Length: 279
Image 1 (cartoon, rainbow, N blue to C red):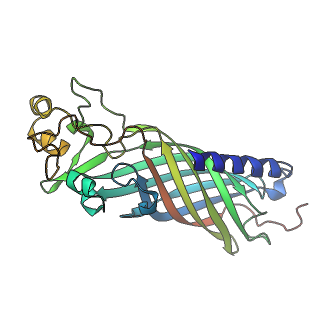
Image 2 (cartoon, helix red, strand yellow):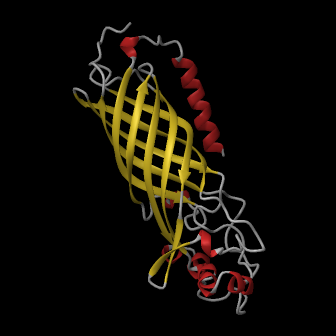
Image 3 (cartoon, rainbow, N blue to C red):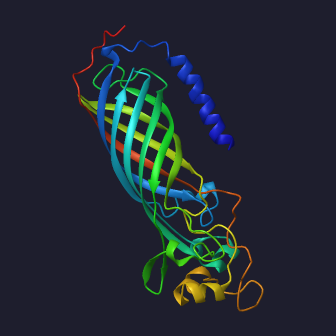
């Protein structure tokens, strides 16, 4: 949580510094953006920040930005995300033996506030600025696992007993908190470019379908079928040398999952060119 607190504190400082700017028509502008980049995730199958871009998958979306001043803006975005991770690619022997995998193709709709470090506006003399952003997002996910040559929807498999008489299913739609930083640059005329890194704090530990312990395989077999048993425990060697890993660690429920994007965006100004005489 330290990096979240620091980012919010810095944004609050920059916001207080910027509120003195007048909300005049000359400083307002509107943009459309087309985004493309990579999605990533941090969780049980990728627990280390240094590996966040490992197996990064193509993601993209559209954005609308309402620049209230040359320092402050509001951006609405719709993004298609795609992440995929495999235990077998880990350097951790325990994770390699666990042998799980997942992919998650998901959609996000977000509203964030942006704070520019410097005055910035497309098609004006204020041609470049770093910026910070933070806000709220709604995402719709569908984690899948690969087994026997096919991708299988994991929520329906009840891999940790969710949806059986031992627990409730996790939600596929929820709220996240996006925050991050970027750089805006004018290209020419009404065209601009931005490069943005952002991460999303979620309140689920099932973005990757892995959270707690191995459940009772007999319960899964009776209520869900053999495929569920196979998806739940794909370990190469049983941790206790027994037929089942029941009640042994499968994930870490203390740490919720994160997802995010590194995006490049081509931005188009929608209204009249700016004037440099805005004071």
